[in-house]
Image 1 (cartoon, rainbow, N blue to C red):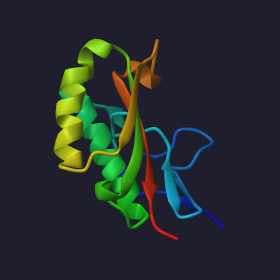
Image 2: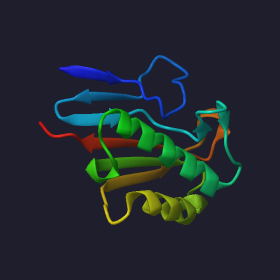
Image 3: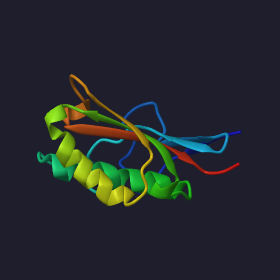
Image 4: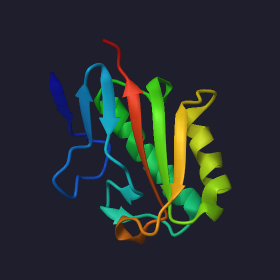
Length: 127
């Protein structure tokens, strides 16, 4: 069974996608960019502020499915500039705490709204 998750704690989806899909005991989130759900505007331009907003948005998506960061098994980070890796990693670690899911991080040519970072997650919800 597949369940669509539309999170109240995340910005409105700006296209034909859902915040997350629950399937087979896993939650697959859409990539989140640093949009403040209250204003609908991009935060920034600082990488720290942008990563913090992305992780806050993801926290809201996870919560809407009854999950949290401790259940994340995989993260994919997309950076507009790999030079922002250390700053991203600092904020990411604040949210993940001691939990260390598998992760990939890639530099991409361009992200939506010319933001600096996008992150998506896979969380295990149990069978």
